[in-house]
Amino acid sequence: MPKAYSAKVILKILNKINFSIVSQKGSHIKLKGIRHGKILTVIVPNHKELAKGTFLSILKQAELTFIEFEELLRKKSSI
Image (cartoon, rainbow, N blue to C red; front, side):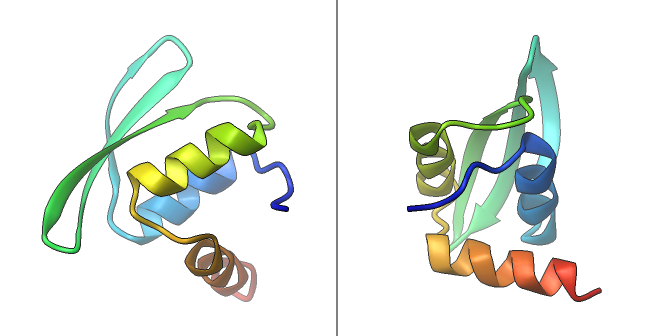
């Protein structure tokens, strides 16, 4: 079961795979990026701790597996 991540951490990881912030409405940040030849839109609520279901939904929107996310997180931490 994944631990709770903050929006700040998720945004850094998404930025690492070329997602860019395009707008924000209230606490919801909209990002766009290209993965697997498709333009994808991801919405991330700007919270200190995201619920498990919200986090998994973000991964699904970004077409990113939890394992890929963890690998990117480890690479970020080692810099």
